[in-house]
View 1 (cartoon, rainbow over the protein chains, first blue to last red):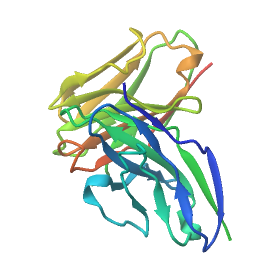
View 2 (cartoon, rainbow over the protein chains, first blue to last red; view 1 turned 135 degrees about the vertical axis):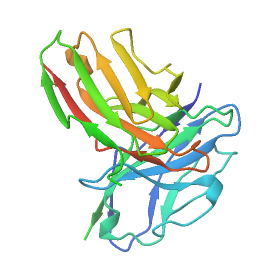
View 3 (tube, each protein chain N blue to C red; view 1 turned 120 degrees about the horizontal axis):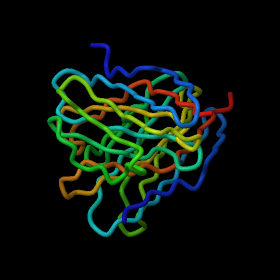
Length: 110
Length: 115
């Protein structure tokens, strides 16, 4: 069974401080990991996927298979980063099912 | 393109009533997904379709839930009879192809309240 754990329901960070949103997963194979974001009064949208190895809006995430983690990081938080963040996992067996974590609400304090 | 369209945006009904949620995916997208979001369980996949065919319905909670996709531009999620524990936000999403290299686009959601 696949599972995604986001241990923090709420996270508050001062503007300009580093941000780290934690995500741990449980899966027996090689997973594909994603971060989704939902800004206030907007639709849920993809932020980044691990296979792209890209930085989006200053955010990066590295897949650590040894620690089964996919933490989302940004060196300097901005007020517009305040949002709900979801980590998600997909198996690599051709099934398009995404398993989501319960989400972390990030609040940036001005 | 208006993106994924869902209707109604809000639904309030009484226990025992039938509820039908509707979704129009982005034109040309082959995959359609139905999700349910609750405070306790977060976002859960209920079912997804590929080319109008249901592929994985393992997330459908019980027989009271059913989903159909009669054509490439329309899908429904039906709950009959509805119960208070079905109260949640239901999202529809679509993607062009598989999710490994294609973004999944979400609709605005339908907030369902069952009294």
